[in-house]
Picture (cartoon, rainbow, N blue to C red):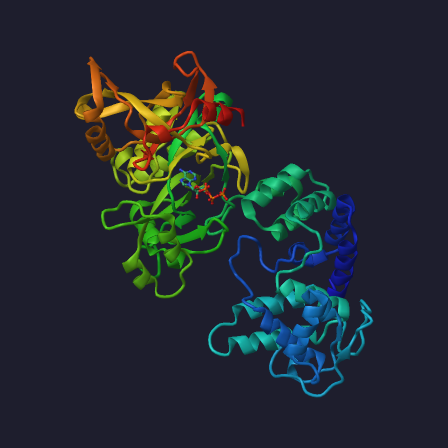
Length: 592
Ligand SMILES: Nc1ncnc2c1ncn2[C@@H]1O[C@H](COP(=O)(O)OP(=O)(O)OP(=O)(O)O)[C@@H](O)[C@H]1O
């Protein structure tokens, strides 16, 4: 396809505001793309490479301004381009405002080598879209643009920026005004003609007469609009159904919504509960070494991708080492990479960021901050795609993949996130308390029957909502613990003020580490005024800050209300009981 035809269709699409009409225009464009269909399916979204491919053009705006200036003539420089940008607001309009093509020199003919000399170069202030202006324009095809941009992306090392400018100059030099508009936008990832992913999906289905659903599935699995468009055209639904996950080609990560234990247990019979690790999302792709591996290093092919499908393998050698040590079959695993201190305890999320996208001095950065992976999902195991399997089965696969070599109990497997399936709120609270005690962020609640939906933020994964409002309650009672906690007070009774009285609102027992229980026991023991079995009554002296999911009416407590899922957040050492919250505030929070 001529690049001029593409630019013409892009202009038509840009001028259209009705969604259905846009889909129809994209459909027609795909239908007439011929051999260039994969390229056109990407260009129309403003992409040069498939979404899964981390390759970038690595062109800054200045490189693009230089190339435009050079192609526009000797009387134009990059400052002039920038001035026009300030006036016109976007690079496409600026590129379309010049007449290109008068520049001579190798670059003008071969798409590279040396700046052009002489030539008229000029202005096209009348915005004559589609004007050709001179005899070097025309005949540029989308394939030539694609191939030149691919060469440009591959340019590395000293002199690579000059080479990029040369290649880009060569393209602009052959552009009409409208072609230049869309070329400039393409190279700076600013296409903005109103074509989103959903538009292309619908257009592929319409153009090649296949249902949307298999197109959608193939896109989720491949993240390659070019491949999916071509397959839909050549092989229809059966071809689309055969597109599978591939080791080395990332999938979009399934995302979570905010949720509560109450909602999760209302929606599903049981909830799958996991620790929530405070790190950065990773996807590990691993294929074991070929026995005839020419390197003879017996190391597998390993790729690590970020949540945005960027390749981060080189920045995280610990994850590569983990894969080589623990895996022996082809897999795709979903997980989190967490920064750890010398004892292996988790460090805050900010520490991971020091490592995550690092390109240089990785060994040095590793000395400062170590990381370890923890996997919670398995998308592919030994030839089988598992996206459509229920969560619990994918988790079983994860367990067996990681246990394969180690012959250990699951609890002891490195890099493996445990999962509890339960309908018991107390068990969920206990998992939450353990997660917090181990230094993690809290819990994730997942639908045990749910499939893996790449890129979706649905209800099937819920991250427990942070407490919006907290309450400062007076501690009016407690219970001695059992077993190893027999010498500690626990299960603290909470009350709010009502005039001169204190009215109970619930008991808090979770979110408290052993170390903290010891501290709280020391703090509260002097205030015991009565004991009955393991129950103790306390004079009002200490104020706890507590979080909760909900305030419900309840006959159990004297206030008439109960805090649902109360969690200990800390002692308000700065407050006496007079400063604790009142029944009035409790009622106000409930009504909000
Ligand atoms: N066991 C787990 N299961 C799923 N995700 C987990 C788990 N542990 C940690 N996570 C992380 O939690 C993230 C979801 O919640 P979080 O709010 O932390 O994400 P975010 O990136 O801050 O926000 P958002 O995903 O809403 O944009 C996941 O993307 C993943 O990185």
